[in-house]
Length: 63
Image 1 (spheres, rainbow, N blue to C red):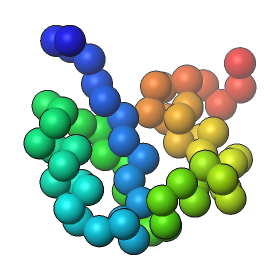
Image 2: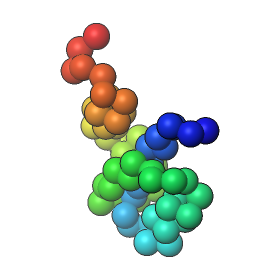
Image 3: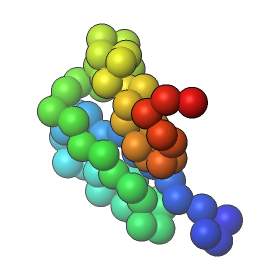
């Protein structure tokens, strides 16, 4: 959909091929890199994941 931004929480320990795939499938994705394994941010660092989502969609720190 034109004007839509795709936000990607990218675990760099997965390898560069995944970053290339995101760029191939999505026009100008917002790739947020983390030096982690797949789903580590979500599963092991939930508070950081929440902050990343807030930043991605430009929500204030508190609602």
